Image (cartoon, rainbow, N blue to C red):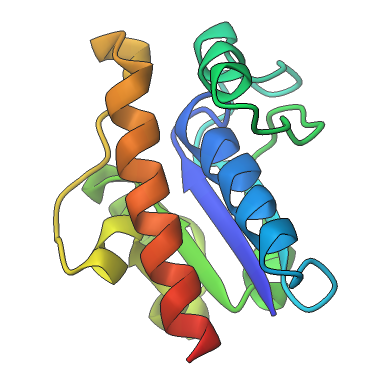
Length: 149
């Protein structure tokens, strides 16, 4: 199984989700069965490393940061992903505009797996990486529980 986390720039939320899920998969001994990656819907941050706020929040919690440089999602990403996990409604709309319709059923809000149809706030604007982490952890934990049942 392959999970792809997506946000606007691929330096804050989606990279945090990629690292959190990779950590959860390692803890559950599922890293060989389930792979993770992340991508952006925009080109604004392409090539940049994860935001220092994401790096600091993960380090504070002893979660290893997945090596990553921001990149934009491609149709090939959509073809290989089992789930495309968007952080907010704008990401969902952009993904549906960018990707062929055959992949639209793979697109979900990450928090929908936790029974919440709300967005994960972008810490680029809020500055609150702790809240973003808590929401990412909630969504990733619920997703992992659902896909392993």
